[in-house]
Image 1 (cartoon, one colour):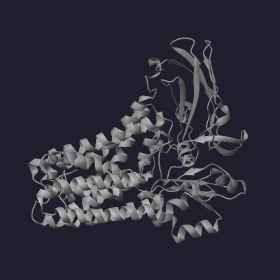
Image 2 (tube, rainbow, N blue to C red):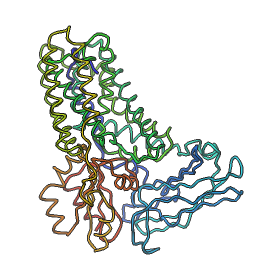
Image 3 (tube, rainbow, N blue to C red):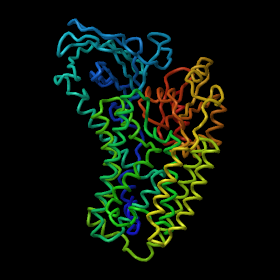
Image 4 (tube, rainbow, N blue to C red):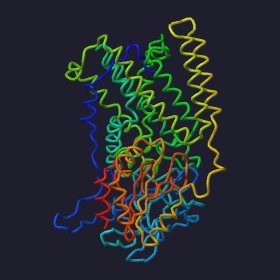
Length: 553
């Protein structure tokens, strides 16, 4: 944890972060799509740009074919095919369910927007390398249907043959776009309310003595990037185990939320000066402080998704491990970049306020945003583990308060106090009551058939995927979806409002997120009574919602 005895506030860093990370509407897929003719005629993409195919063979002998499509393009579920001409034996393709659509070319079909992944077992390769023909067909919403496409690719036992683009099979220009999107997403994370309490602590440290700024910024940056990569490794492991996971998955665990609530409560006590915390000026832990602050910043950033980031992480989750890890590293670099610039550019550093006695008061003031975060985490826990889980954690806060009082300004008691704090945390995390799923009301989980039923009845649907721990989701609901303007608009136009709650893990929601190329919430999709679904931005205003619906007819 960071050394708060030397903590400083950095107003200048916030200004630099704001200038570098101002959100731009859209997502990474928008970058890949060409613009339309200014006179109203659509400009259609070449087939290889409309449907970007990458493929590989996994270590357990499964061929994974992955397609990425820009907005407005879709693939037919019934048109996927795999064939060989060298004697290689393939299994039956595993094609996930698609979105129901009444198509002008094929009638009632299932299609994929944003992304599609099909797997087929390689039962007996005829050689090394061997060849597989992959067939698919798609269309554009503006009225163009492409002819069936077949690509012959050569594979080796360990993956795609070097002649087809290397082990990952990802085209280099596409990878550059995705990594740039991840970098921008990391920058924008600095503006999100979920990371403000931790970044305010980092801002305090950058206002310290000039000779320590660069060291602190380097340690913080290393902590951010290393934690993003570590989180990527966890995602790789869970994917290999067959788990359906996405961004923010750890906050679906009541035990993890409990640990975060206790940690932030301890941080608040430290900022008030009533509990000396290891890593905040205690001996050898002091040097680890900036690195630990970077780790903590990433952990609390996971409830947030921002423009560019959602598409980049969703893309990475559909790719081999090296691509996903590169995306996560780019996110970390983007998030840490403003602090490295502030600490490393002398012209900016000279404009920072001078250290002084005022910083002690400011450090205490910063405790209250931390305590507000604690309130929010306990509220999230109440949604997951019920009133019993929330009461258990509140009781742990009382015990922590007693330990802080017992050890306050008594260095000799610091070691036993911290042993007791660690023991209390382990006990709380391991015994917090889990939500009793068996008593959940029937139909409480999300079911895509609800959306399909409304469409079948001729009623448009606005789908909102949210979670209690998603700050962006809660902000959009308060500022946009819950306003009288939007509710009245939905009522006047008979638009059904369907909400999917991802606070606890729900494979049905995870599957729909993957269909639209997203790794986490929020996801907002408008389904017209007739026509194709429209994905809205992750940051909403009433005007954005109404304009998107009007544009969809």
